[in-house]
Every structure is written in C-alpha cells, then in structure tokens.
Image (cartoon, rainbow over all chains, first blue to last red; front, side, top):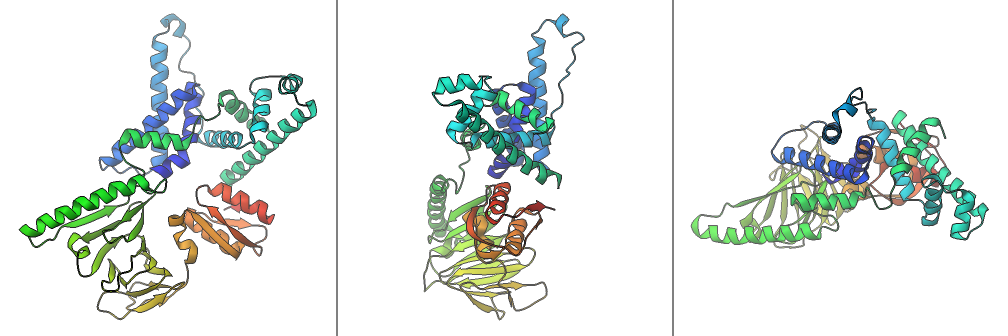
Length: 162
Length: 271
C-alpha cells in the first residue's frame, strides 16, 4: 500500500486537480480512492491493475463532485453547457507530478523568486525591490529554476517514451 | 521549453502551494484512518510494538493451551506493507516482502529447535543460540543455522545468500547439503539434489531490506542489471565500462538514474 502511495499519490492528485481545480479537494478524493482500494483488498478481492483502478475511482469521484456542484446552479445556466471537461491523461498527470516535485526541490530562495514571478505575476523589477536584491539576481534565479524544471521534465519524457 | 511543457508548467504553477501533496503526510493520514500501522517504517517502531504485543499474546496463549492439549499452536506472519520486519520470540529479526509469509509453532521457540516454514522470500538475522539451531523449511529447500544473517528465496528456484556467519543449505533435512559462509550463495535448481555454489545476488540481493543499493567500483553494466532487476526494467547506456561507487536509495528509480548519469557523465535509456 505504501509503495502504491509513493508511486501514484502525486500523479493522482494532479489528475484530480484537472477536474476539481482545488488542491485540498483533490487530496481528499485521492485519499478516498486509496481507502476504496484498501477495503476491496481487505475483503479478499483481487485487483489486477491497481494503478488503473485508482485512476478510475478518482475520475468517477471527481465527476460525481462536479455533477453535485452543478445541480445547485440554475438549470437554465446549465443548458447548452454539458459536462465539457477536457479529460486529463494519466501521462500528463505524471509529468505534472514530476514538475511539482521539481519545484518542491528548488532551493528556498530560488523557489520563492520563481513563484513570485511565474505564479503570482510580479514584474521582475517589483520582486527585486520587494526582496531588496538586484534585478540581475532575480533574472538569474528565474532562469536557474526554469533550467532545473526543464531538465527534470525532459528526463521524464525520455523515460516514458522509451 | 516546448508548448506542451509550458502548458504543464502553467497548470502546476497555477495550483502550486508549498507543503501540499505531501506523500508522507498522506500515508500517515491513510494509516490513521484505516488503523494499520506502517510496519517497519519509519524504523518500524510502531509495527514492532504491535508485533511484540502479538507475540506476547501468542506466548501466553501457547502456555495456556499446553495444559489442555499438547501444544500445536501456530503463528503465521504475513507481510502486508512493501516490506515488514518481524521479531520472533527468540529476538530473531525476519524481514519479509509483501505477500511472503512465515509460520512457526509457538512451542518450538520455548525449547528445542527453532523451526519456521517460509513461503516466498525472507531475510533473517538470527539470534545466536549454539544449543538451538534455527531451521528454515520452504517448499523446495531446507536451511539450518546457529546465528547469522542470510537471505532465502524460493522463486523461481531456491536460493540462499549468506551475509554473516555460517549456513547449512540442503533440499530437505535428510539430504546432503552445502555449508555456506559470509559472501557465499547457492542455488538449488529443479531436479537437483545438492545445491550449486552461485555467488550471484551479493550485497544488493537485500537492497529491498536495506532500502539502498550499494556499489563499490562496480562496472556500470552490472549496476544497470542490478537496478533493472529490482524494478523489472532494462537499461542501455552510452558507456558501460565506467565504474560506479556509492549508495543509492531504492525509493525513486528515476532519481537514481539521474544521479548516475551526472556522476559518470553518461546517458542512460530505459529500453
């Protein structure tokens, strides 16, 4: 069970995140899915492909949550707007989990500057002023982060393709 | 970065929050909710206590039953985590991978021979007791020791590798066997009566117990075979003659490969 978590927890969370757009809700759904699998296995059921089982449970749970959320919206608003979510792919989620891990492992300062720049949309000059560092340092840190992330992503692509 | 990579990065960045999607936290939460202690991790403290309690209970039970019946009380230990560490009543430590199991008669551990039956694979650290040999019987082999560390595998064929001390390895209790000492291994192919010496396995045969691979000036070719066997994949690399020294956690295969690539300045591909 533990190795299943280690291999699939983050990718499953990112998979759920595509449906739910909420980190905490995604973690709950994935936790629930592992619970469902655990119950089945404890009851003596044989599940051959536990990975795809987990993805299927997560997907169904997410769709349930979305449907429930929508039923509270005015029906009129729903018309013409079917469940038109782009289905995320397992491979994409794995790549994204890898990126998440790579961001986690950036040096603290580098991550802070990178997130301010790319996630929070600060201008590089603003970051330099805010943190009291030179503009060149900001630029260096951002490109350093991008390089690390890119290397990480390329590696995983290679492993999946080959 | 390609457009696709940017798309992935944008998505991750949009949601990224520090400290979220923490796998270790998720595992703890899971175990808390489902009431199973993560045996052997971290350092197996909790699992040990549960197990020790179990053994204590089993022993008490064994003592009670003996007055009623000639005791035949049996204990079966089954590994449920990726690997579980069990402590037998004589303080022998047994590490079993998921699905392996070990059975013994409670009474055997009170006096006489310490005899256990193994299904699957197991790593033993036997407590020294010169007066009482420790015996492992599997469907296809028999091992007798006094106090030592050794690995017993049963699939595809019976195989024993000794890390410390001395081991007697045979098909059954009454057939002629071989004596193995530290650093020696032997296999017992189907149909053979006496085991053949076979040093394969070595220090990384118990990588799953230790949680690390250890390489000491090992040719890259051998390194990749060891890692490949562990994860069930095969690798190719640009320069197989280079040599590697170091200890690597078994947790993340991709990371090990990256580390080796940068340490040796080679490119490794999964085939």
